[in-house]
Image (cartoon, rainbow, N blue to C red):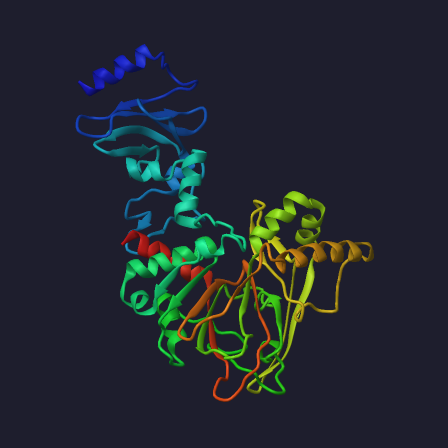
Length: 415
């Protein structure tokens, strides 16, 4: 009866054959209600249902994604077809619907079965692809300004993050969405940052080590280890693959009026610049800057160099990374002479905006708080402070990589 109703609907709606030769097979009772067609002119299998748009799958993609044990290793979720011998011109001989599966017999005799829902999740329709990309690949980011900062700032207890997968997931999603979050009530121990990092994956090592201790140090080669004002910056712009997230654990906070952290969402500033001063935005996305770090940490000498614009876009025009650090911007500026002044004018607009009261917020960490933030999105700094008596400001930091965070988010989401 379902087949009959489908035929009646097809006739009444004027749904006729595609502009191609086709082989039809209708879904059975109690299973997927629709038809599977071979469209030989476009080399596609077309799945048609009453209540949805056609789903079209190229022959070559279907053959490449056969789920049988000879073509796909289920335990590792990995394709095992030998690409060297793979025939990109493979064509089906027959397609039919068996329950909720699409059954294909290929001309060479190979047989493939595809679950309908599995195929639907991999639809080539643009809205389906967009839905998957924003739910599984990267979560949409939401920008904020100084005015909205207190509304978007989330807090999670350290013990809850360590014990509860749900809390861990919520913290990481907040971090991915807004670029900043607070983990509070953390124990005053030197290993706390490592515990938090290893709850996600593992701590990221740089030439400053794994954990790094931020205290005023005489004779330091790192301006972060001074008690003076620390300008807004992103950490390690001289790394080709720089750490994605900062974890700053406040063990001891200064009793002086200073020591507050400064934070700005560079994405919000970049959006403003792109809209109101597009030529400046283009200058900061197209002009390659030299970033470097020369020095030593505990006897380990380093000389790191990376070349990249201040605002880095991906191939789709989305911002994927911000590089910003006055101390780490090299005096070598390997650009055409006529581009130098244009870049400085654009940089001036961007710098004034990220430091303005419209975008920049001041936040003084309490002892036991871990300030976590996106190092490829936010710029951060610190106001100068005076150490006195037993109040010696001490922060322990560490890094996480976004690849590991995204992996953890996906795993937790599927639990």
